[in-house]
Length: 311
Image (cartoon, rainbow, N blue to C red; front, top):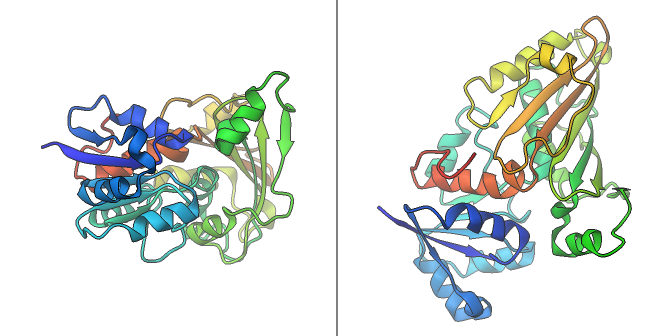
């Protein structure tokens, strides 16, 4: 059986990456509008005739597109931030919690996670669920992404002659749009303190959560923290937890290490006899952080093998 797919916003960074992952597949047929992609009626027809729609649009445009869908059978994956904390939409992080994959499979409305939140939720939610991090704990997350995460304008800025600075901290008002999503889906009750940055490389991401283990209830060890993460993702296809010995042997971590894949690797760094730890997630901001996750969700919603077309 061939499923029809319409990518609304296929000319953007995320849309192009999704199209690249889908167009070679024989089990899918893409609805392509070409020069008609700005034609409202052509879009409306495509939005209502496809088996599944992937929205790669700004928030307001995504909301407008959803309002144009009248066919109740159309499955929708939205890659914007518009619905990520909306209880009527399923959050599209299949590995996030037991039963999440089943919720995605049963839904016609799935919100694709943000890249930074994917790393943070992957690191913190299992620890909150296990009671290692209290829900009211003040969590700080430091992160750096390649400039492709900023879309076409930032890509043009960094790739122009002379480029931009090597490293740029931003979100300095502490009102980044990912904070509500991060807080809700980690299970935290207090807003996370999010310190994002962009580096002078195209794609790849590190998301880090520093922990004072000695200040947490029960003073959990590095081994306990690592064990909770390893248990949460045991058998997961796309999320892996590095062995403690492997992490201990590392002298650095390359943010581009998983580029081109839909994988995320979680590390626990720390002195086993000490009271501090650094939790680090490595992922491709255009892979598991965006387009790869959208394809994974599409596969689940269509009842296909979850890893079809993904590395």
